[in-house]
Length: 535
Ligand code: GDP
Image: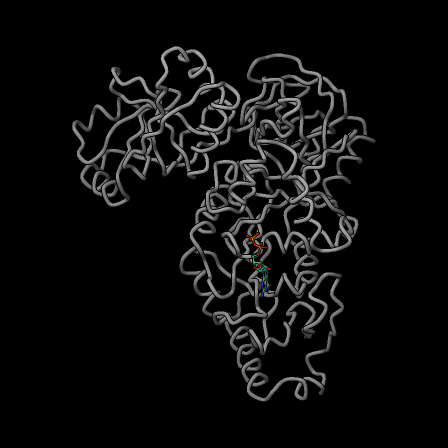
């Protein structure tokens, strides 16, 4: 390896952090993102992210669907610099109707920020996304938001995280008061109190007043009951004795917790500084030839998301690639692992809130967007040098199922072509009945929106109008050991067997309870909520 390249890669990795925010809709993800970008100087006025979003909406009929629904389907990658670090924020969609893209984005992330509304605590979407983080052992940093509004007791929130997610918590800062009486946070690292000033609505970087713990002004500043409450809490926290253990954080077993208010921009800078110190840098990735470090001199990466028709005038497709090793350079040629083809990577794009900007190079931990003339599928590896294939991106357990019908026989070909292409693109999972006489595809999704996207695109891009019959299942489990294992257990009740797109058996259940019952009655049957990976 040329030592120059080695040094360049070392420096790039040292100065890169990459993360995704996991949250339930309305917890404040858009607001927090805006405030983070403010510190990075990427935007100068908060509100810009939303404004960009609004501008964008007029641009395509694909977006027209977003507009009708008032939601954002597309997810983007935001890049900003802060304290000499290049920060990549992989923006996962926050709408309730989330899709598999949300899960897949986490496959490209090195860290996750779990954003929680202080009044609501853990919510369903956050829990689901947490499960994916856990699977990937991602470090999780928790930001408890909206402290300026009435909320739950901080200790109770920590307890909920510990009990329900099985994560140890370490409060990096501690709130003093909440809602109308929110006075600020105590930074345990620096042993200083940051006082909250209710002004300016946080549209600029917040100027906060910081005082030492021993400062006599504190007793004057805080009303008596708050002061004593704070003292008590502090004793309790210190007494509990746990230390912030970065190894445990990096293994995804302990979460540093921050309290703040994204809207008023309070606690965001404290969070960002600590995050930079403790977050994982781009690391090694598992491949068919073992773990490969990011400083490996040859370029490699994998596709984690495909986006169709971002610009309807060109009917284009963009493949989002996470750079894993080496240096990406514009116009370089790479090998495409699955097809064995050689591809020239022209027109690479960096994505900033979906304004596309051409880039010349990228490093491990970065995400690039490539025009995809149909060669890329989710999970594909591209590489130079020795052949590499990264571990695939698993299919996550769908929760919604529907039979898709084409009522017009003359559209048979377009229908099948469309279904097959949308499946390859990862828009939805496709299953088929184990009963060979039933040929209609079963759409399997994690969110209702995926069905709508498939129907919409079949009509727009393939000219096929389809009918959807919802099926009464909500749980899918892959059978470990395949058909052979399934045959051994004999007849099963309260479940139907279908095949996934690779012909593997999947059991569908009406509810979790039925699934547990079948598992309980057949201890030799091993079921998995996630499709087995194939290299
Ligand atoms: P998202 O759905 O997670 O992206 O949430 P948004 O960022 O759009 O925020 C949802 C709502 O919560 C908006 O009305 C925000 O103004 C509000 N919000 C976000 N952060 C805070 C906060 O720290 N305090 C208060 N009071 N409201 C907030």
